[in-house]
Length: 92
Image 1 (cartoon, rainbow, N blue to C red):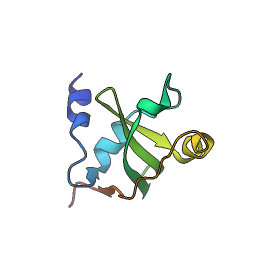
Image 2 (spheres, helix red, strand yellow):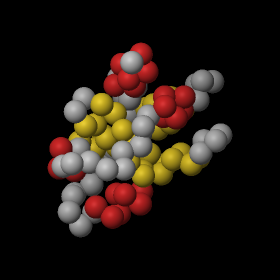
Image 3 (cartoon, helix red, strand yellow):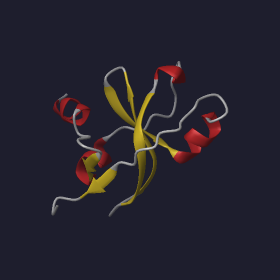
Image 4 (cartoon, rainbow, N blue to C red):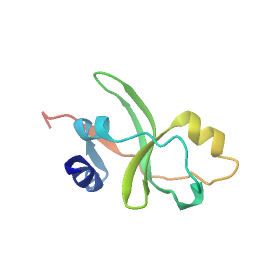
């Protein structure tokens, strides 16, 4: 519950901490993808994983949608989001 509250506001000024990005759940399935609000594109090679996809909001919760899911749904949904979300570590 604490992490969910923290993650809701983790994207500030187009930036997110890598620690928070690792905690964001991956959205693989959704009843209505039209309710998903794209926030920005992420392309980051982290210490433990590679993040290539989009951060989205659904019902006031933050999720990560990987690039393969975006490509599969692109014929049904317009994923065009100009802004890129920068990922930074604890040292910044």
